[in-house]
Image 1 (cartoon, rainbow, N blue to C red):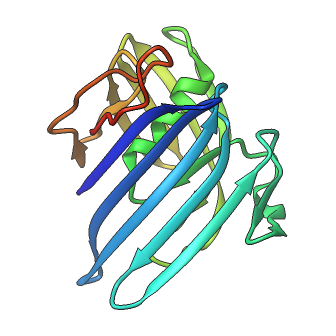
Image 2 (image 1 turned 135 degrees about the vertical axis):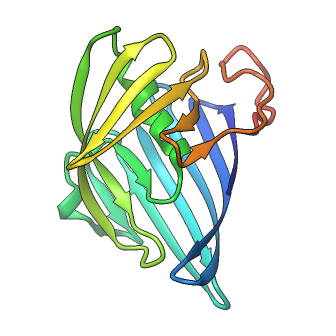
Length: 182
């Protein structure tokens, strides 16, 4: 289960979320905040993972593909523009909004993938194909999922595994930076 709020911020957008996930019979709570610039390029990522104890991850990116973790360069994800949180379908919104694909267009990219519960960061090759208005196909390796998005590009359904059950507001720069839960 995930609850996330996407809101306009000074110079871009902010995603903040809470994930409740069971993994190998262990319950986890993940809290995150992602800041992106007006071009939907990831700039900062803060993650807190809890399962009896708390671990934190802090990432910064320059929007051009240079990443650092707690001040140390992350060469394996050099060139990546987007963050992808393993248990969060909502982070697929970032490349969808950034790429602005036309119907029938496909783009391949690599994302900085935060693995849960390890908090390891890996390069994840993936592609997005815009099937029609509000519909995309996500691929990574042998994995494929069809995505449904709203008019702002916010993911509402991720394959058969995840579906938004409530949303509110609009994600545009013209609205006040109030919450948009999904």
